[in-house]
Image (cartoon, rainbow, N blue to C red; front, side, top):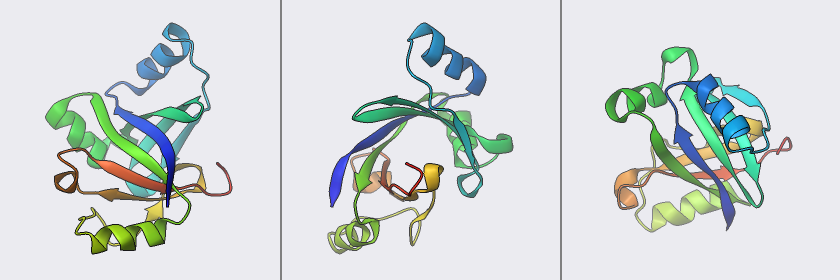
Length: 136
């Protein structure tokens, strides 16, 4: 079952500058960075309970975030909903006709499992479903 809005992700062309902006200019608490090799993404988190802001940047200049930035520049990338059972949610949504960008959840930041719903299934908005791991 979907239990919360886990985070709002923003694609950023200059990772260090964006981290500095959210820390120094906006004064948000910084929870560190993490590379997610499976997604070819570097992430930085700014918790604002009960949700958080996630900055996403291409890891080694590769992956889907690199393509997104080339095509659109920086900006809102996706909304992420937290799940307490991602596999049940995926099956339930597939049965309702939702299309996903992958066949099954994959490893995400903080030891989580993640999967993305195709934007065409959600009025053009990329939606991530995230089941937190032990590290969250």
